[in-house]
Image (tube, rainbow, N blue to C red; front, side, top):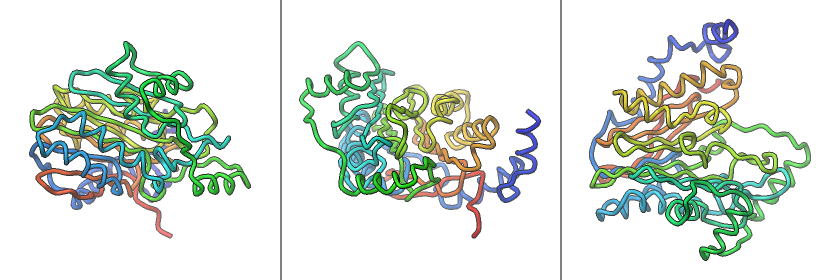
Length: 331
């Protein structure tokens, strides 16, 4: 405990302490709308995902269901070979296999999930089939693959030449070190509230590049990578999944909103919880949360500066910078 206090009080990261937290957060919020309201709304991790929020908005604007919207949004990066952290084109594990994780959750509290799925381009849609057609929440590995094939999903090679070459280059040193805000994209988490105030969420990823074969992060775990409660709101996250798994971060965000916190305050609480428990790891690891509530208010916050998010609301599809605790290091 004394080590944690010492780190927080005398941070080596630019002298930032939790006492500085409110100042940094207010500064970051200058880039955000101030608690905008209005339904429908959809929010997604990372700025490059404006195409995903646009796909979701196409459904929401026509009075469609939030569940259909988040699935449509998640499918966009899953099929994009240029997105090296989700689906087709995702960087492989250290053995050269692209393995995918995804989860989805609807307004009734039902959920579906797949983990360690290979050779299927759209794990988010397989997760939805798990939710709707089976008595289970999660299928994994070979079982998830067999189920996907039975449902008509084609077998596809997801390893692009770009990803294969990145893997070959990685093998020269074989050093595993997740990079903060790499290319400002990562796992996509997406949450929507439709015109009838129905809330749904989805999360999909190819996981950490060059991970150990068999590694599963937070993305397919309900309450870690994503969580929604139709009485309250929903949350999703991105970053180093191990730290989110240990804290069930999105469940925490939603529960804080249930207790009366705004989406912004709830995401701040979740990030501070991680920092207080794992201060040393937070020096080099990023975690960012997004959240929306039943009224259409939003929030976003991260450990490190550089996390942004896309939001489509009031007919505007924009990218905003999230609040943070630790500023970027100056060169």
